[in-house]
Length: 423
Image (tube, rainbow, N blue to C red; front, side, top):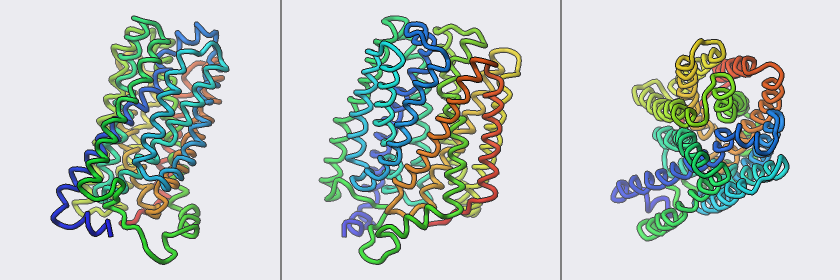
């Protein structure tokens, strides 16, 4: 079997190096993925002015992305389970890069919404493939570090978006900003193909799975019953609901935070580029910290369940403090609170996304992860539907308070309903 061949002691170092090479390119793909989706939020005031959009209209365009992203998350998980990480990476990247560049041609709410919808189709399928890649190459004890790396890239992409897109928009206009950032993803295709040619030469297959032995007989992981059992399990349902809560809050920060600092705190577009990378730097560090901390606790004898859940609950509690952003005096204090909230959010996410792989049968990792991602995006859709009208009528205070309640609810779900297993 391929599994036996590539996990022999003589090839352990080779497999480890290839595994981290795969994760490095998945990291870069995740950077570009989030950069392409976050450009709209940074340039939102300019786009609203040029296209004549209200905040409610802007929320509609955001939801066009989130609805197709939701559907693609589920379908993409199934595709990734069938085709593997290698093929799904290339397919999704091509689709979302094309969609990102098309934003430059938007002329009103409907064309902008169409571009956002196509972007959601491409981007939604990427993360189930990336998480499956981590599950293929890393056993549970090491998996959080690999998934933390991928999730830290979300923050790096969001960190880069304000200075890059603000500079491009100020120098050349917001349409050129979309053209330039949309083209970045295409640069990843050649090294991805070259890496898998190397994997084929060294390991005998372009799609090996060192951490997942494919079953040859039995019903436990070969079809519907295992998937149905996982879907009904208390731990999986609670993880799904917890992700719906925390993702809703994250989408508020991603799509509305730049507008908040411009509309309420008085920053111009140049200042957004100068300062708004800081919360996303904090988020990137949080993803790595949360993955390291849970791995360290597990290694010190806390066990998978206690170690993972302790970090999850603490991270959610700290994220809830971001609700006070709307009431603290001064720009610096508001920026600091948002940075702390996003640091804790990605610490939470590194462990939550890993926990999903620990309650899912290996054969169905991507599709089950995709379903939780769809739940998270549906939460984001509901959040946008509420936030747009609230901001138009009352300002940003109530949306910030809502995020705090969502994080506390997510923590309660972990405490009451989740128990994790070691593969």
